[in-house]
Length: 451
Image (tube, one colour):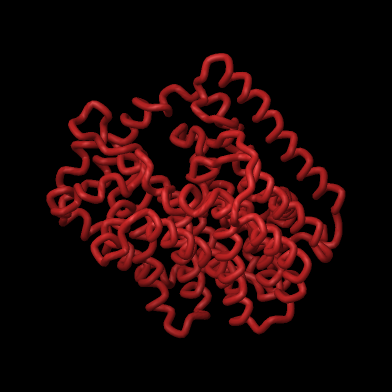
């Protein structure tokens, strides 16, 4: 099937995704009203129904209209570096304006200061080595001075980021929120760099407006997971540049990729699954040349934390117990195993669903075709393999039972790699961009999200 065919099936896939969300909302509302076991306010999202406008509304509408109307044409003709800069700026504006629909304090400055968040425990890290040695003793709920949910649920790299900001005079929720937002905006650039190196520049340019207007921006606005997504994205981008030897210094790119991979798994336990996307990059490029340098770089952060007294494996073992002590032990697996996918639809939007349908159709079906993926005529197949690898990572996370609810936030680092499937959509794609922007605007204006 060519990129120019199958529009009706694209629409059909998007409609099916909408129906999935509707069923998840209806069934979830019934469960929550009946026994309250979902622990979310507006199933399947961790949010509450609260129609509202805010200071970010005019800017969000303006950016949505501008990118929809002019984004595809500008993406096609801007010089490459200018496109990267424009994508970063537009993505930053989109994330910021959506966050500001909830107002400065509620949307940004206070997001990371609630009782579950990282900034609650900054003062407990005055002696960092001592705190790291004692970290696992405060994960379980019955332990003395147990960590708030997000600190207990993540390795210490996450909270130490905000401790570091505080130490250099950038303390408080506003600085923490802006740190996450600015870095999250850079993730679009990382994906573009990856697509250009792994596939071709044309497909990267086609994906650019969709990376900017992704509904995921609703949750990257002052969510630490937006920051995590950016770190993981740049790890993949540097790996791709090293594997394709399109970096000026491939060895430096490979070591840099490894350093970021090492940091990634100390930001979130679940981000070990980003290795699935990394393996897809190596499979498509058919080289293991950068791997020794990546591994060398990846050992640095784990070695540092281990020497300081933090045991990642022991902490994860205890975390699993803590997970089932809380809402994770109550939320029904049978519902979330498919409702999580409905959350993902809302994160990536209908255009991405349509693109994923094309990705499946473009996937090489036999070994000979897989070996041919390096050819210039198979760029669509490369995009397909990359996005389907991200989908596989989500499937593993879903089946694990450790991702019951809140996946609109938790799965952001993986959902980001589903967005390139939009490059496979034919025509001007303005209708699809309108759907993407409209979904994000509706979500942010009708719901008060928890992140």
